[in-house]
Image (cartoon, rainbow, N blue to C red; front, side, top):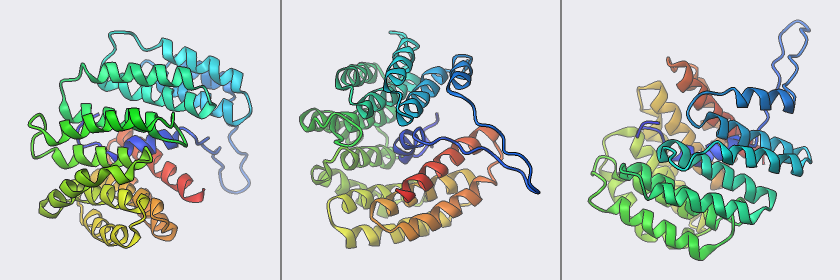
Length: 315
């Protein structure tokens, strides 16, 4: 995944795995296409040859199993997902997959394997040479450690991990061009780890950078990340003001892919701020924009993020 991938994608990717894609139906009374059974999904996942594909799909299936009441089956599927990740795995590809697995274990209430997967992701993060990707992974692991909803609720470990991510994002390892992206990842990490009050130094840097940015996508995403943290810390007026700026920047983007991802980031922040009407409007815009993305795989990924946002809005 390139550095242009939005930071907000981390969270929406985890939420999207909670969805079961609805069967398609045709017009004029055409029959609905039957959804795949768990066995069929497992067979398809095991045949996935893309890097990290098996782990990603197996984690999604485990969530479906748990949602349907099969916790034992979910645990077995997650164990299989863990075995697909070798000790010498590429951290950029498999670090996020370990986060998926850890989060799913936490949702199942299986704290020990959840922590083991998170700890292993930390080990992979330490081997990364790309500082921006390293910051992103550390921020995601910080959420696993800290979140009380989808993680371990370990504030101490989360603070330690996020502080490490913040130091890298603010240091010489990250160029000024990519600093907003790195800081936005850390800000979202603090927000989603129930540590919004600890994000003040990061938010101050992020707002300062956002004000000077002329590149519209990182500007929109930086403002959205800052708004997300303000909303979770109770500063609703500040969050609302930043969301107006973020939405304005996102709508001015020419590239369909960049515009779609920026709109998704702002939509997620609006939803966190409690403005579901604005979030739904942004999701609709993002969905329309996604249809204009030329690359099929990128279009598929963006649409998945849109669906995750729409599902979050309905909660």
